[in-house]
Image 1 (tube, rainbow, N blue to C red):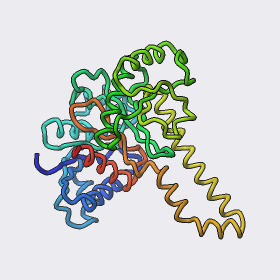
Image 2 (image 1 turned 90 degrees about the vertical axis):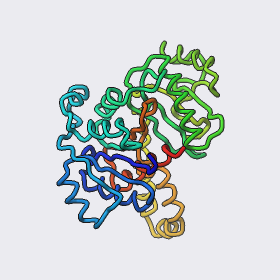
Image 3 (image 1 turned 90 degrees about the horizontal axis):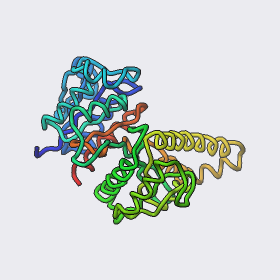
Image 4 (image 1 turned 180 degrees about the vertical axis):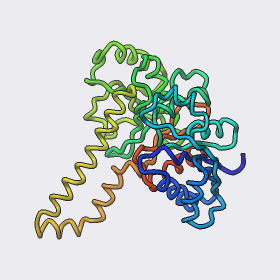
Length: 319
């Protein structure tokens, strides 16, 4: 496949199909050498696309059904054969696209990807890999929500996949890997994490030991490993904390005349800081460990987030 083609689920997000279509149109403007296939109800997508004028780089794959977040993933994947998630996954399995982006149900997307696309050889469980902002740049959090329970061997595989991603996509040489724990010393944590620590020591990775959650934003490591339960809590806390902190800063800057003057002078710096903590700038999290590229966009993704999730597919596919 010479031209990079990416399938995009239009029906999974909280904000509806219109922002997905807008994000897709913006992506083709930013990356004119790609083609997009929008997956979902054909008439609905066409009606929205017409608002943006002629789009020769965008086509439609009709998928009349939608898998809702409340549905049991395995049942939904098996029963809703014409849902946007199932048809999008089958589309890339058949070799028609290089990647698939969806803001839909994480459970359904993981289940569908595992059943339809299969895992890479030697990988027991695919994992979500999310880039988080740090003082020095970014750290990769893996797993950030795919596997609520994990065996010790999963942790090491997560670390290996995370290292590969940071080397290929972020250009990090010999990435440092750490295991999320309640203490930095060896011997801390539950039985699973302790065993994972021992496995990491013999893995050949640049493993520096445990890391406590308070040290994650400092940027001392490149890959942090945990199960999806812990990872999703870290991810959601950082999103909420960043949003609240930005609001608190804004309130303080608007509290008096002098602070307002200072805010005007530092407007550029605060805009840059806000951008660094905006999940929309990252776009989404790839499922690592699958035979094909699948990117999970945030459920609340707007057009900017969808555009950047598509950008992730472009970067990943070209490395």
